[in-house]
Image 1 (cartoon, helix red, strand yellow):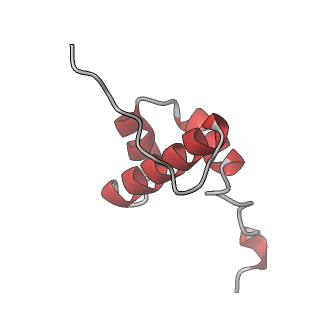
Image 2 (spheres, rainbow, N blue to C red):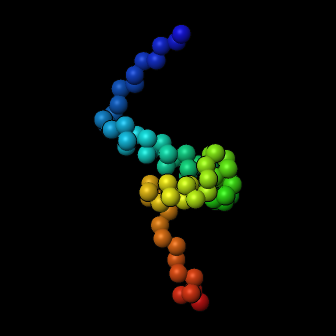
Image 3 (cartoon, rainbow, N blue to C red):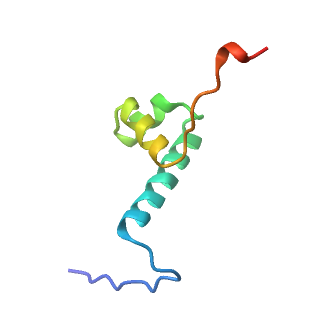
Length: 72
């Protein structure tokens, strides 16, 4: 069985911070690969689209939607 040597960290981060950073990057990358389609991204990541929206909002990838009635 191969052994894994820990890599020295430039800056110590908590497991939660590291997990959130990984999730942010994975979602952003999947969104780009799926033409910014949330439904296609959710499918690619194996998530329900509503859960992806909640996760993205919690991670700061998604803000509140602009009010459509104020446009033009």
